[in-house]
Length: 256
Image (cartoon, rainbow, N blue to C red; front, side, top):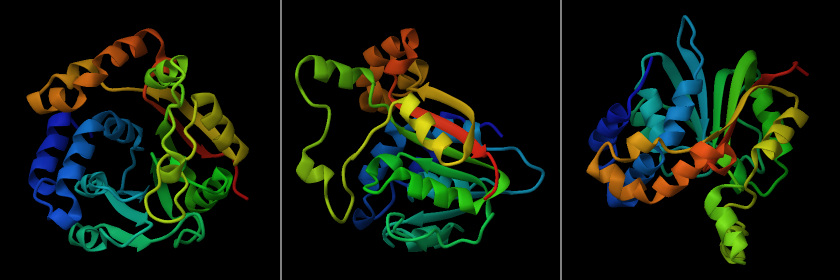
């Protein structure tokens, strides 16, 4: 079931822009449109099955609601806070509050066909192996996990380092004890491969991902929000390791 950027943008127009101020509608609109390359990566990775695919999306965003709008998916989500619990319930998403750094996932063993763990691992302040092992517990034997993270070796980071500028956020923002902290540890593709393999997964695909150059200018709004990435995208075509994101799709190598 292929999904175009126009479908995602229509969903944003109808379901995200209208969010109330306390639901951060402006923020989520920018977030959804700036990260289209991430959403396409998730959609490309979804398994094809005869019946509905049981999906767990870790870290609730409006993209969770977009997934739930598809008839071939049965979507559940966990998040640190209950801010979007009501919105999820209105859209047929089974919501649970869970702090992955302190709690087990609130699901039985082998509950899901597919787990999305996208742009969350870089925020953890516990060993990622603890969380990845817990995700492995709730995956079915033939299930798949998609892990995505910002590529620490992306071109903007390399340029900053060459100029003697750290690519990291202020440590006062990075090391918050509670709330939404900044990126604690970003990953290279080799690092991410090593982490998931060490946790008992077999890698199905590992790749660098970036914005589509054609998509950057498919609308005025996208050009305004994403146009700054154009030079970096050309560089990423020549050298994939300079791209913005790294992704690993994997499956349990064996059940414990």
